[in-house]
Image (tube, rainbow, N blue to C red; front, side, top):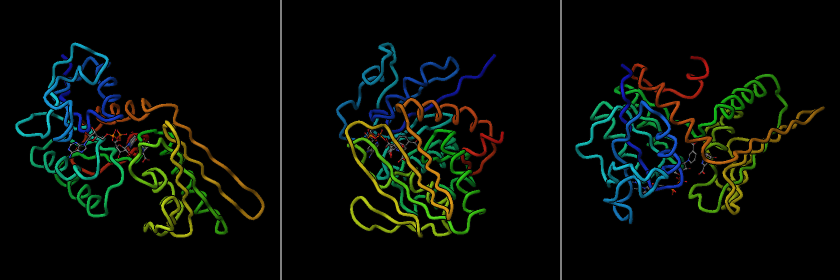
Length: 257
Ligand SMILES: NC(=O)C1=CN([C@@H]2O[C@H](COP(=O)(O)OP(=O)(O)OC[C@H]3O[C@@H](n4cnc5c(N)ncnc54)[C@H](O)[C@@H]3O)[C@@H](O)[C@H]2O)C=CC1
Ligand SMILES: O=C(O)C1=N[C@H](C(=O)O)C[C@H](O)C1
């Protein structure tokens, strides 16, 4: 008999959390234990059916993880509640898949530490093709010593962090420096890489990378058509992660599996 995977959705009332619930409900072998939201959220105490297409879903929307038992947490929330997510997973030996961006360096250090105790996978972008583009950019960097690069990211007006986690990750593939500097509210640098952030209407997420070499230019554009791309990527990652040993993983581990 196939074992049922018990999942907690952190950030369940958000744009991604709702898509995640819908994606999880398509999986016969997944059971959603509960959804977590902020203490002030109006959906608190309601069943998951309040935030999903499936009116029959009775799992509760809670403000904390207390007493919950699960195999994996899938987290798309906010940096301010990220520490409580990691603490719950480590203390209860629950695997963690997280796509929350805008994290501080100490929160990234915490993810690395958590990998000693549980399987953890964090990705700024759950599109496998973004991971493939990151890998390609690393090759560009190795093979082109005179390359100059610029990144522009465009997202919906509700997005709280800038630049996007994806833009930072793409720039990190191209730079020896990992340190982000703020130029002004929508312009940043990471080493010599310039990043521009645009906030526009309901754009799901577009990233353009301009690569300038002495005798050629290359432009790569990745356009997310909708958030299901990320939700479905995170569900696949969760199904894979629960079968792994403790450790810190990225999407390359899934590509190479
Ligand atoms: N890695 C990826 O592929 C993707 C990452 N993201 C990231 O996921 C995160 C969420 O994005 P959205 O759903 O658009 O944001 P959102 O603002 O719509 O949702 C955030 C959720 O976090 C919850 N939350 C806020 N404070 C909380 C607290 N103290 N305790 C528990 N829950 C709390 C909110 O209630 C809400 O459910 C962002 O960091 C975003 O950048 C978004 C899309 C794709
Ligand atoms: O907030 C979003 O919407 C997205 N955030 C991620 C990021 O910060 O890179 C990924 C995706 O582009 C959508």
